[in-house]
Length: 273
Length: 277
Image (cartoon, rainbow over all chains, first blue to last red; front, top):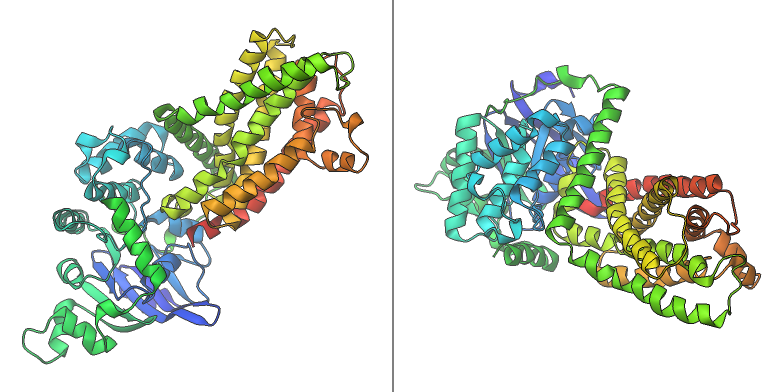
């Protein structure tokens, strides 16, 4: 893969990414680019391959086939360098409830080798950025679900990554907390130009946050484009993203997913409440 | 705060030097141990509860058996002989259940968060192992204070105590890494607890913790010699009871503990990425 094929400023370039689990192909020949100032959304039902795609791009899972460059580094050749330049908020809860918000970020600052002298400043900055300055010294077990999500985003930003990966950032949040997280993501993009790759199965979230979306259906990327573009392609007035999804995937977004996916989503939801 | 859009692709590909990487690894280890210390400071309940069991062994079991004179312990009293054994046992017991925290952290996404950091897997595992030694050392303090309270004569010189700290750090790291290996192979807390119980008792009874190898049946002796706990007990006995007979020189005991810990750390590091899947 020659990097000149990629659009200028691409921070994520995936080509033919494929992951098989036994005879099951979870992600099938997925390719897309994300440039530096974009929010890119992978939209699809539970079980469509969103999390598997993100896990490959964050080096947690090796692709069976295909390649990708993330933040300028090849996944296969330089996974450690990829990790150094990305931030990742998993779908599951990654904040540690037993310590304070400050301490959660402090351990990350150390693992990313931010010099000791600058750790306090960086941690304080990231907490303030997500509006958590006032609760930094409270134990995370006393945080609300929305605060936990914001803390996790702050934690993923403490080393100033080039790309931020968010896996289902608002799953399990109530409408008010969801709105707060959306505002923060919007603000990050507008103010700091961080590239964001997120997965979601909420149409509204994709519509609201994403500059471009990729519709993932049974492991395949069936459409990529700006939400307005995709809607316009339907040739129908006032088409919704839901209709776009049904057009490309041939079924409703809510239909997918296994018992395991459903259980996992509900567990996250229960813990965030 | 400025978040750079992109670190110019390709150009930054120069890998950090070996010295730089070692320095980073040392910093990462320190931060992981500091993190564990913060956790224990927020909630020391487990440490306090864990102190009960060694107290029972020393005060009840130890007192009864020293009255019986049933176990030959050479030039030292049974309580003297038993104290390093209980010290090692309490380190084993607290370390072997350390993996249960890994299972909880896997069920959440906490381990995933560590795995996407640039810290090498071996450093993440070694950091957890060293963190476990904080618990081991707190147990050791309780046992030594109890022994002093029971007027068990022990050599508590500064070099001896420093040696005890080293042995306990190694023992804690060894058994907690074994525990994390089990945790990365089984997926549920129930199975982990079952296997933990299954492993702990044989390790304890097939060792020289509460009786010497010399009274074991001949089939059990090789098992005890293959058991890392035996070397931990032997090292602690040499350090705390300079006049008692030992199985091996101190260097051999510590060498075995270091070797096994390093081996288990690499095995665990290879398995650790499973924790994110």
